[in-house]
Length: 70
Image 1 (spheres, rainbow, N blue to C red):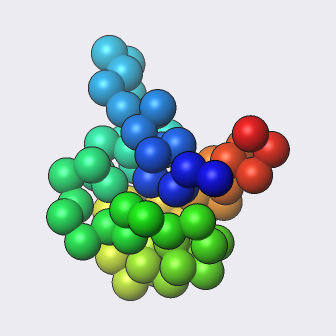
Image 2: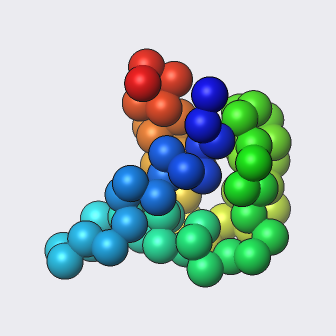
């Protein structure tokens, strides 16, 4: 299984950024993001302490559902 980070990168670089792409761009620039994580709690805990924007955790939850169904 690929890491959540590698899944998230597929949302990077949109010409019209949305919240999913904002999260992806932020994670790409954040050198401490848990890049190898495949566990929900590892990424969720990190985002709760380092949230880049107010509803980033909600966006993460949405993306996690898509990640799990992939």
